[in-house]
Image 1: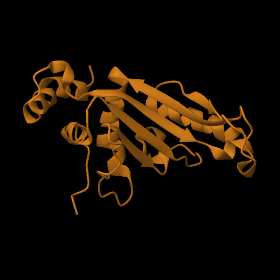
Image 2: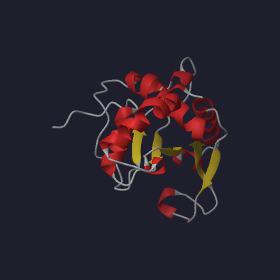
Image 3: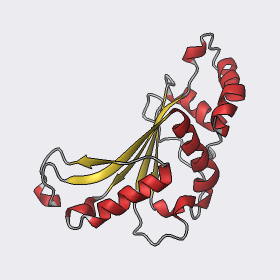
Image 4: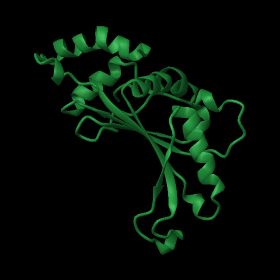
Length: 180
């Protein structure tokens, strides 16, 4: 069992139940899944960018990436329907907790001029999104010569609202910015 999941089961779960006065153990907020996306618009001109993005996601997440294809043709962006334009990985259970642990403790502190993550990136249903400008901040990418790729990390929780999700993520160690 991953270190973060063990911490969640032994400590965080009980704290959240007390804080929000939740009687049913199945109603306590938890992580459902983590989706890591990389949109590679440059792949329309050169397919090597898509291959690089796929390899990067595999090394970062430890799971095979799925290619995302365009649903519509957009002439302004030179995209045709069916062209591969991005890659994504969905992590569940142990893999999701392991990824979040590495994200919070190893990756976010490596971002230059990092002052914390926004509290406003919740969607209203308890899900949180983080944008990472360069995937080279992940420890798995140290020493590799690659073109920088932007990533989007979506964390889906079972929380009913943003307040419960914020408490869950804060208990897991997410470094949120101080309120202004």
